[in-house]
Picture 1 (cartoon, rainbow, N blue to C red):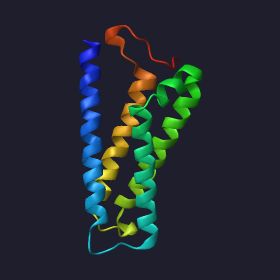
Picture 2 (cartoon, rainbow, N blue to C red):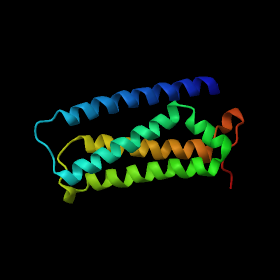
Picture 3 (tube, one colour):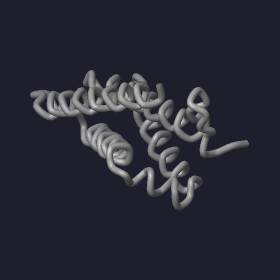
Length: 135
């Protein structure tokens, strides 16, 4: 059962990566450019989300968890919360970010935070695996 859930999670993450690549390409090919500050924030969000996804698809996160679970948790929380806060900044009306990719960034930031929570704090209790960080 845990193997099936792992495959479904891997497939979902692959679909999210494809959607993010398509969304970024659409964002970069738009004719009407946005102001410099918001464009910089959008690039930072994209880079942080890509690095977070690369942590999951490579063995880097697993090696970090094996060496020190708290450092791995801190890195994932930093990436997740930074993306979430910057995405919220772009969604707010005073940011004047008129590109629809801001909603995609916010969606991925929520998914990142949820995934970090599941991996480190919830674990896979159905398969008998306790969470790496226990209170």
